[in-house]
Length: 426
Image (cartoon, rainbow, N blue to C red; front, top):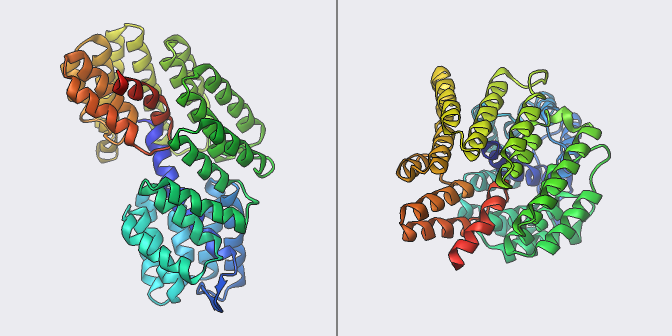
């Protein structure tokens, strides 16, 4: 029940969408050719244009899903419209029928539309080599098209080719540098390359280009990450508190309660040796949930995250029995929710492993943490700590190497990376 899992899905989802929608908003011409999106509906085109603006300025939320729905209603045979509707769906399960419909309709669409949808879906499935081949070909056909450069940058990032990604994003800026998102993506590259001063500069540029009355997550959290990578938890915490104030002031609560920000604040307190303050922040965050417009399942999930955070904080305080009670409570919640709860078992093992690690039961900690999310750099760091405490230095070093080589732009990696890098040098 970790927020980072949600954020990773959100980032992966939005990266593919954000490039895709740019395609429709432009007149794509090169060498006398044009990518034609197969709809004659003026209304569908207008709805997609609205999505373009909202996404390129980090304006997410149910409003964008509603706009995508209108595009499909305006033209029920519009493949790209169904693709957008699927991409903006709240969950993968809800997205699937729309994506399937898009793929089917794309067979009758223009070649450019079909190939573009195919390439983005390949990227979304992390089949980067296949996706890259298509986008590289499109880039040759349309060298002045920004959407292709943006997608190339993201595919290269997925492949870990940061220099190539940077070049693609810089070409996109040459074509149009008026919106904030591309600067955030460049800031992410600077983070991964260890140039934290440059990252802050780029995130500040992105923030300065935000739309009125918004507080975009990308540059807002990017500034937090830059401080964390340099081990400056105090400045990171201040940046998060500033972001929460902007989020509330600018009306971004329409995109959901600020609980995710408060949970991030809680994590910084926890990792800064202030578990009591962490519990206060977790509770303050959850207080924004009950009266929100989140679904009942989402509210239950955030309740689980509250107990998860309290369990980790109690373990840090040495209250191992109380912490374990929180883990048992989460286990019960998962079991009571049947099939829908199964997705949260890795989160249970994360908390159980955390508690066992703090209480000194390193063998049990390792057993639980190995069943947690193995793509999470922070869980890998916890494994490294447990292996190190149990005397297995080889396994500890291996876990630290996985943290360092990961290329996520998440709070988990920002918290884990500095310690993992130090352990590798020790």
